[in-house]
Length: 175
Ligand code: RP5
Image 1 (cartoon, rainbow, N blue to C red):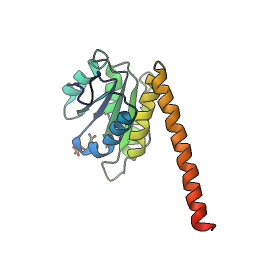
Image 2 (tube, helix red, strand yellow):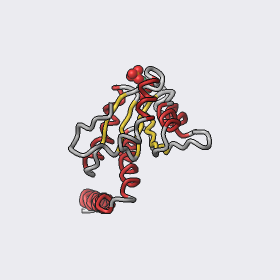
Image 3 (cartoon, helix red, strand yellow):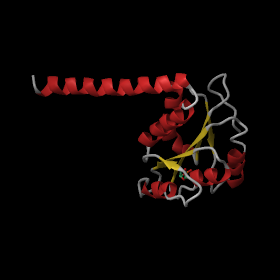
Image 4 (spheres, rainbow, N blue to C red):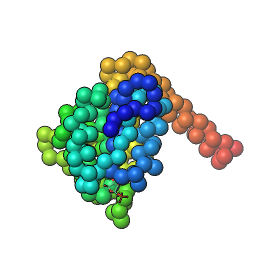
């Protein structure tokens, strides 16, 4: 558990999810971390189905060198809270749509942590997975000026995208 396969450096961010059915969405977090050149590890473990594996993951996360853990889970999503209970690393939850409740169940399970054990909870689904990766980068960028520069450049990229879409919309409907 915990071997980085995506580069030479040891992982700084953990991406953990409750099931392989979460992978299509949580892959968006992995893509974002790759974009920013932040090494990560990816694991599947369930709070309910593999509690001992989950505990092992959380209790060794600091010694593996992680700086933050992104946790995706759907349904009665306890995984982020269980990880947060076992490590003082920042834990970032991504609630996923896995049941007929469309992710609202996972959102409420993740966001309503009792005081003392925080979990930073993102939006449901792919937007949350992307933002979780950016948020993890922002945590690391506090002591990494190069990464802080990349985050700033990304915001400029987003702003350019909005301006381009505006121009496109104008061309289509004004002209
Ligand atoms: C959660 O249950 C997982 O995170 C997943 O979102 C959901 C359904 O899991 P599977 O039944 O598809 O394995 O623990």
